[in-house]
Image 1 (spheres, rainbow, N blue to C red):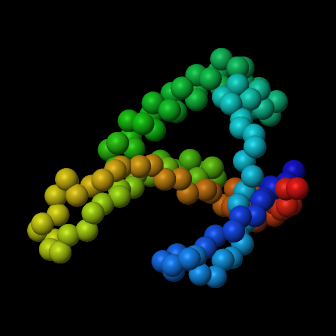
Image 2: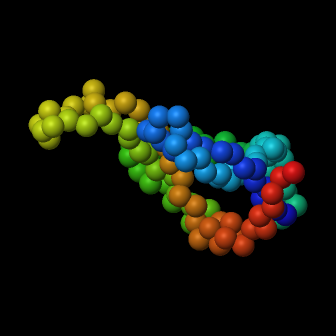
Length: 128
């Protein structure tokens, strides 16, 4: 399996007329695995039934949702971690910061070592 990339040209930020343009690579994401696809693949590697897998996934979604809104890191062993992050507006003094300075609350994902290692060994190919 390979990760394909395509190239795009990007102008120099903050320079009138674009300045010196450089070429960058971007991963081509042309396929998506659905829950059905995941369930079928997990069935191949385990003795669990489709109903078991779907039940665990459903329960996992609810537990993650419940715990992440309480500021917890959800560490899924070698799969990685999910954790809440904030986007905020800055203020001059600490005492001036209030919850209204928080623009958004998001969830971030940090992959585990096996996923990082797999990506480091991925075959990279230019999409033509």
